[in-house]
Amino acid sequence: MDYKYYRDMNHNYMVISGEKNNKDKYQYKMLTTNKIKGFIPCSEHNLNGNTYLYYEVDSRQTIKNMYSSRKMNYKQLCALLRDIVDAADNISEYLLGYDGIMLSGDFIFEDIETGEHSFIYCPFNMDKDIGQIFAMEIIDYIDQNDEKASDLAYKLCDLSQNKGVLLQDIIKICLKDSVEIQDKYESVINVKQFDNSRNNSIKAMNVDDKSFSKDIETDICNIEDIDEYDEDNLSNKGKKKSAKKGTGKGQLVFSGLFGIVIISLFYIRYTYILSYTESILTLIVMIVSILMSVISFISGIIKRAAAEEETEDIEDIDDEEIYDNLKNDSYLYETSEDMINKREDSRYTENIMRGRSYEKSYSDANRIIGDDACGATVLLDMSYNKKKYKLYGKDSGGTVCIDLDNLPVTIGKLKGVADKVIKDSTVSRLHARIYEKEDGSIVLQDMNSTNGTFHNGERLEPNDIVELDIGDEVCFGRVAFNCR
Image (cartoon, helix red, strand yellow):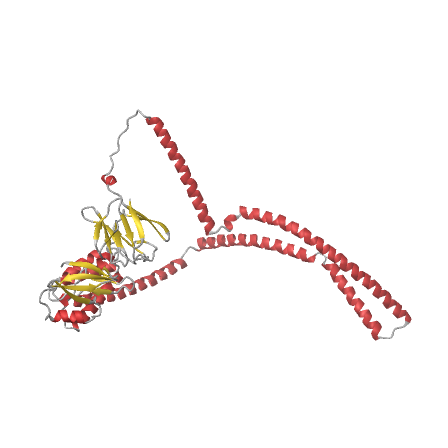
């Protein structure tokens, strides 16, 4: 079926030529006057006696473009098949035939954000084998490495060979069987995992006691060595702290005791009536206690200050010793980052040595061959003469290089959907696609982008294709690239 894309203001349309004299057809009226869920809105335009159906596709992408490079997995395939069944049920409410649903990669559209599928309904499409053709085509879009997706697609293809059975009924059978198989598969996996864990536990219980005890002893010895090393360091630190706190402490305690004696004597003298002899004795004791308290206090302060200075000097020396010891025993405390850095350093050194050996061998070879010597000419592969394309440009994140050796490649700003992400607000989520045709030429295709794709200053129509060549300028929105 012939179709083309047309852009009008902010909308992209798929345009299909309609039949003449269709004003009285029921299908046209139902399609253009109703908004059917799961189907792209359609409007009818008459131009020079011809009727055209305009389908407002906007930013939706066809599954042919979506899964040309990134293949469809099992979950995405099930979502597509369920949407087909829902669309068929919805169209039956308007008494429209199933044959009008365009089940082809060019006419099935997917919303990039939601993953919902929308379909094109063509009133004059009367292809009876549309289900069989679709089942054959869907195999090209699935990931062959996904076993469940492959089994579901091939089963759908086999069942679609039966004539007289509606496609939606076949899909329901396939989805029902796939769910049952999946449930059985998960239950079998759970049973196997339980059996494996049980067998492993039994095997673990039957391990040789001697080897098991040896392993435990060696592990305990290693742990004890590390613990002893840590305890020694902690004990040394504890000794330092105790020495730091204990020096001058005795003098201060004596000063406090003499202070208590002085207070007690003052209390006795002013509370009780003493004789002359008792009064003289208490006065002498008070004077002696005051002198001893002051002397003890001063000596304690002096010794404490001296001890603090000595402790600081010892700590400085011990820190250096501990640092040296930790250097020697760094294998006990080596982190994963240190190990990675060591590996990178060793690889870097290895690469340098390889480079030196390569330079040496290269220079030796030149000395041996010489300018006048004749050597065997190596035949270049045919792929060497093939054009190698690359796109060079800049986005908000810096310089961008799009390598076109592995095609097809999709370009956009949505990570996980586009193969090459361009960080710019004017670029669509899925903007363009570059792929290689059967004749070997590399082409650029716009994918219904909002701000358009430009080739040498000329804007491409939605889904339009143009051939790329070295020296061309390509723009995705406002981001410009040069093809080299």
